[in-house]
Amino acid sequence: MDRIRIVGGNTLNGIIPISGAKNAALPLMIASLMTSDTLTLENVPHLADVELLLRILGNHGVDISVNGRRERQSGSYARTIHFTCRTIVDTTAPYDLVSKMRASFWVIGPLLAREGRARVSLPGGCAIGTRPVDLFIDGLRALGASMEIDSGYIEATAPKGGLIGASYTFPKVSVGATHVMMMAAALARGATTIHNAAREPEVVDLANCLNAMGAKISGAGTATLTIEGVTSLSGARHRVLPDRIETGTYAMAVAMTGGNVTLEDTDIALLDTAIEALRRAGAEISPVDGGIRIIGHGDAIRPVDIVTEPFPGFPTDLQAQFMGLMTRARGVAHVTETIFENRFMHVQELARLGAKITLNGQTARIEGVPTLRGAPVMATDLRASVSLVIAGLAAEGETLVNRVYHLDRGFERLEEKLTRCGAIVERISG
Ligand code: UD1
Image 1 (cartoon, rainbow, N blue to C red):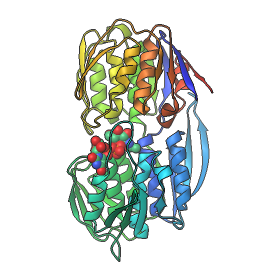
Image 2 (cartoon, rainbow, N blue to C red):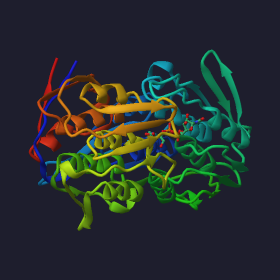
Image 3 (cartoon, helix red, strand yellow):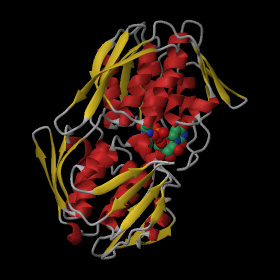
Image 4 (cartoon, rainbow, N blue to C red):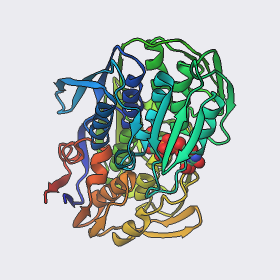
């Protein structure tokens, strides 16, 4: 199993290219199931989750061709992938695939809308909480689908003649359930209104792509989506938006180590709340042409309290990284997690590096320490693992992060991007 070895203490200086967003690429790829024409996606990141979804889509009958590998000066590459699903050959998404990546459950929307039926495994639990699918079930039922649970699978069936537009209010904000409802309603008969929809930029990206394919969706980015159903969608070409979580992660790394880094191919407007928190912590952040410049001061980190919330609030996917940063703040900070009930597994690992953190329910109290010391640590989930990398970059001595397959799910060529900016980070294979 691969490990990442970090020798801390260096500042970060240079350019880090930001990849296409994993959380946009996944639903966009799934949207390819909705048309028999070719959907072309540019700027698709090279990540384990994307590769797994390519396999899953292949099982359903999507023909995939990958090309256009494009080297940029700063060393990034982004892929263009063509997806063509002339016919859906299988409407079942099996347990062994869905259990590996929760987002693959989202195929339920397109399969149901296009084929009138889908048999999709329940995703099961995962490290950061129970993550149920009740909102998907209720929402699709509102569109007229019959949703039965049988032997760990959801059997979804549309009424004769297809799904029917409806008005539906989510009792809780869910990114995935919003994606799925939007895709299902796009091919339903009549109009659908979705209230309390997720407002994440990735929802807007999916809506833009679906509209380019001929869907009639308005209101994306607000809490109310209006969707006028159409009978079929065509192909389109769409560029995946920049990864705001990767952007925020590297910004936090620079705030932690100190230095001066330009994050290339990203957009400051995607992460206002996190940028604001970083500025309050003492980092200097400014938009530059096609990216963001961040100047960190390392030793002079100010404590800042944050609470995770659905967009436009502070993203839960940056919570662990921000906590990593706060471990070296000059004072006490509080981090409150409101989205997932068990997203504090990095706390114990950060403590191994010398962080002083106490947990009280959903709130962590972090008392900043002047120095962290390198140690072997264990990655527990995607975002938790990168918080350990951030802490390791600032720790004295060597940090070994075990189980880095979590990192490979969401961070493209992390060690290379950091090494180019002066960090000592290497992957140890085996
Ligand atoms: C997406 C992101 C993930 C991010 C999360 C919250 C992708 C691939 N993943 O995950 O990185 O951390 O948004 O921003 O885009 N819930 C229910 N019932 C449901 C569905 C969700 O109770 O049927 C709950 C979840 O348990 C959680 C909350 O709603 O407590 C928000 O989850 P949701 O927005 O659905 O997360 P994902 O879409 O899975």
